[in-house]
Length: 327
Image (tube, rainbow, N blue to C red):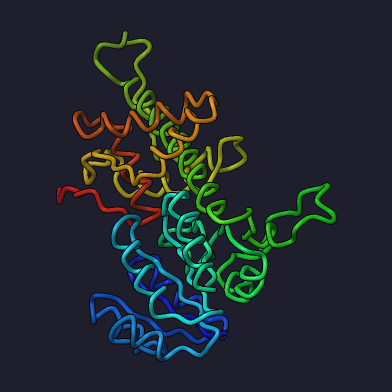
């Protein structure tokens, strides 16, 4: 299958590489010519602009947009809509707000174009591990994109099959689902990211408590100088709280036990706020997710060890750079 890709940042470039590794052809465009040249050297067809990209794709075209949520994605999606022909498709693989997807899908349908929203998780590790994808949009369009989803997904791997799943969607076992109509993919990804905030905050607070047990205010007989890197490592092995995030925390602590190369200022990219907004609208208590979001707000004022661990985990899984210190 032929795929156009717009946006060749950390995830976009690796999406191209993984798709090409599975035998598909990619035509690529980015505002930075060097990013296009790099992937052209790796076998992709470079494009000088959106019009050039569309011209180089065969109908029915499929264009994957991998840009930050907001105005840049909106402008790009609308520009593509004006260039594409009936039967073509745009896929927003970023983290757009799901209500924007619903609006865009309606305008695309009026032009006889397909629009899919694909919540994509995997960060900078996606090339190696594959991407977990949550897709929203028309069934026929999802089916047409399935060869690309299969290429990007991690596959069954070594994860045991869940008992009782007989007769259910096998795509979920391979790493992608058709979550529902337009907007459903990004809505599921939005909640995924809210949960991610909560999980990371739990690790960060736990390790902060462990570290603080060595504080001079603690009674001498209760004061422990704990090896946090070793604790993280042992929890990876057989513990009920083991996870990929813990793997990344262990790696960060092994590299620098004090995490002094992070300042602890933790960004939020929007999905956490939207998840809390959805909880309010649905009258669903979301104590942990809310607290985790507020902790990120606080981190931009006071930086604890736990917040440095949050910074470390975000850098490890997604390459999110938050002005690490040189020392």
